[in-house]
Image 1 (cartoon, protein in one colour):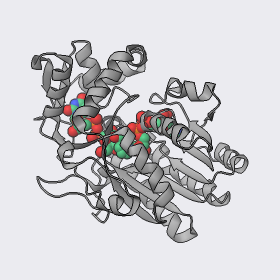
Image 2 (spheres, rainbow, N blue to C red):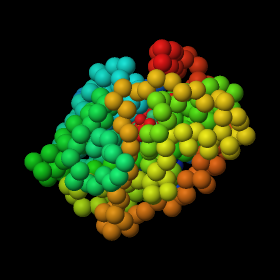
Image 3 (cartoon, rainbow, N blue to C red):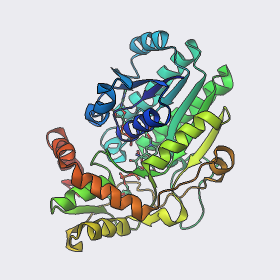
Image 4 (cartoon, rainbow, N blue to C red):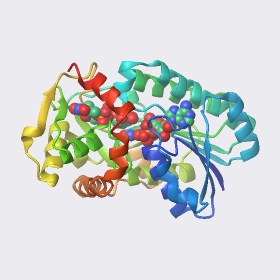
Length: 338
Ligand code: NAD
Ligand code: DAU
């Protein structure tokens, strides 16, 4: 099998590239990434050194570069993870999100069609469904109701992908996953930001009342779902992927769990102004993935959080390099006036 993984130097992309290299050692893997602020080639260094993957630096929205790559690559499967992924950055400026997530995805679809790709797996998010009240869970037929520029751009790309399947017959599969956590996550997202701030005895900026609920899934479980979706998913279908009921946790409880593991005081928690249009609660019904893909989460949140904290303690050099330069400008802009 000849596969392309986009966004391969990002958080989920790099975990997925490692996962595929281990689970499918006979696959020929091309790892593509533009290496934006969120992409880090160090995440793939071992695989590149051992020639287990070949790396291409390119922009998925660059039609000429993508046409050349697809013509030469003759890919059987595309796993499309490349995206601008942070809600707070999309609030600061939506243009990059429309460019990468919508135009970039359409560029890949055009190239996949022209080069007769067999399967196109589009990695999306539960955020396309919007916000839940205190009860209920998202199912695949829940109407799309995105609230941030990020989730709106992901919903748009989902629709372009599904339309391409219907109109042109490309075998497309869309996965919609809840919040991931684990190694190599950029420290702008809640869990790695709070772990690294706590290690440094810095304040943990908790938005609003801290009672927004997210459904947490260890990234390894997500990787398994993506491979199964490619192998067993039905073309044109959407599959929800996400945490179990026990992993649906308010942010303040996640924050306290991190502090407890690190033996740090709760006085580090700093309540700050809320995120605009902050989705109150996400929870997912993954019974379709369980029935059709044979997938369900396997890593309990407590265990996954422990090992993730351990990873950040063991890999200080990785995140300390990131938490400087451009990152500090973003941090000041996002948190300065809250
Ligand atoms: P990330 O920001 O860590 O990684 C995204 C990667 O895409 C980066 O390496 C970046 O350099 C690359 N990229 C961005 N624009 C590009 C472009 N124009 N061309 C090529 N590469 C580009 O994000 P992530 O958390 O790993 O998310 C990966 C995918 O999974 C995204 O599509 C996201 O919407 C989706 N997702 C994420 C989560 C989560 O909790 N993190 C949950 C569900 C779905
Ligand atoms: O649900 C899947 C989505 O999960 C993915 O599609 C996104 O790419 C990913 O970023 C994530 O989105 P969230 O907005 O839920 O993740 P984030 O880590 O930014 O925030 C998680 C929760 O924590 C959310 O309720 C906002 C809150 N938060 C976040 C940050 C960064 C804080 O209270 N303080 C913070 O500093």
